[in-house]
Image 1 (cartoon, rainbow, N blue to C red):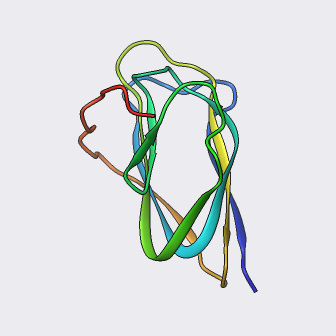
Image 2 (cartoon, rainbow, N blue to C red):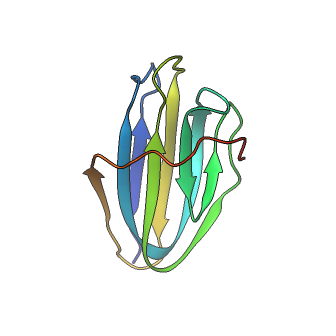
Length: 110
């Protein structure tokens, strides 16, 4: 009964100073199919874990409830972008909400 959604930000480039919040409803699985961001500066954050660089994160099990996928890029170098598929365990929905979120501190989190 679950639904799948494709979520992506570029495969041929993204811009500087981008910020977005994507709300998903669990339970479900998030599987990245493409990942190429400026390492150490442009991040996708899921369940308090930030991902950056050019490796595919492992599948992420999303627990029940509402959760945020956060995206932000800094003000200089950009790369190709990222893409993932969210598959809910029960007819959940994914909703893209663009916002002016303050970018969290950019450390060396992976």
